[in-house]
Image 1 (cartoon, rainbow, N blue to C red):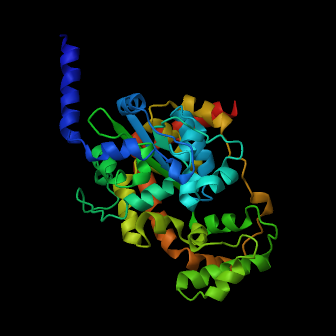
Image 2 (image 1 turned 30 degrees about the vertical axis):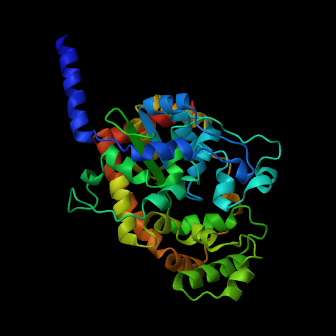
Length: 384
């Protein structure tokens, strides 16, 4: 055995000790069985074969991109899929082709008629990641647990990030994660959890104007009025029923939350402090819509991609095609005031996430000057 081999093996042993080699066999049966939708539900069977399950467990890298609404997430999920060489359809479904039906409680013939009129259930493969809005269901389930910060009294310290095995154990408490996570864990496996945030008032405004048949100040004022009452706890069932008929009205309260308070609700069940702990302990990268290029180059760094490689990817996925800047009306002072009140909690979480991004990005590239240079390199390749 060469000296280099001995050194390499020593590094592997250190990694194994640091990762706590113990696995979670209790997850095995659930991982194998949850992919099955039985005839009683009126849907074709889609299950993992033993060969697929074994092959799946040999994969070394698994990933979750948490895609919030109207944050530039569609662009970022395409970048993540490109970096990981994943099938867009498979990661959109998070491994479960009937996810849309499961999420909406639709079964049998109704599911097939609405989502698969051609009889094709979509992706039948076993992906190693999840990059769509469906991932919000995973984190909402998994992060209901109490999450402490044990490594540092400073919540923004990067030492607070949990090791992969511990984050895997938490995610695996969500049955929905069984479709794309491995059934057991070990030191040879890695998990990467990322997201992107957007200044909450702009997120709210973008949500209103997107695909809106009446993008007027009057309608925006109505929209903001209900959001304000909802956040304040003063909404009524009559008011809720009325807003359903408005442009960009919401049919359920969970859809209402997408614009006003989604980040804090999904991460911390409405608790700002918990949402901040989740960001600090679970996420390898908390990107920012307002710093998209830096976010992309940092994402590439996490996955071992060069700025040049990320520039080529960005050349293909520069935007998600859903830009609505041309239909947005300028803010009115009263609108800004109401939006600030409505998004106050999400803004606290966003501001904390921005601090994390500052630290994470510098840590990934060693210093601010290098981050600036690699970002410029990526842009140059992208624009070439």
